[in-house]
Length: 222
Ligand code: CA
Image (cartoon, rainbow, N blue to C red; front, side, top):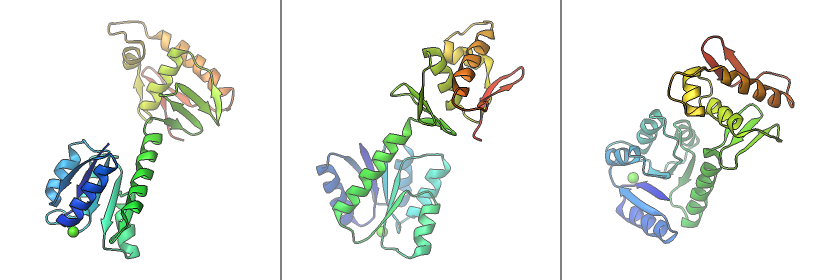
């Protein structure tokens, strides 16, 4: 687990680096906001600890720029600012949590662990409505009831969920789910879609998988 600390106060930065390394994390430090953003965007980190007031880009600007790149890495702010409006501003910009200086290292560590645990639990699970697919456990549940799918049905549902709210075109489905990369009749998809619909509708009356005539299929957030 690698953490980026963006903090211009050398003493605090070193204190954090030492404490986190003793807990088994790898830690990089940036003392300047611009350098911090560059490092954050490199994608090497599981969590970012951002000071608010920095030379160059502020913590808030780093957070904003980072989130605008669609990066989901958890962010915790370290700051002396503590008015309600500033807290709200930080959270609205996409921070996951906020800790006020001066802080106890144990509290910061606990907050880091909460973020990393939530990140781990939510990172791989795909869902729509009450349907949840866990690729790691190879498990599908609808309204908490397990659904028994064949390997291909599972792979097809996973592909549709990974592309939720986008139309999955037939040629791509055949390539990604069946691993067939030449011109091949795509009627086989309909057979599996029908099987999936049957199994999923056993527990729920609506049709989750919509047909886009002549193009493919889509699963949409309701
Ligand atoms: Ca500062």
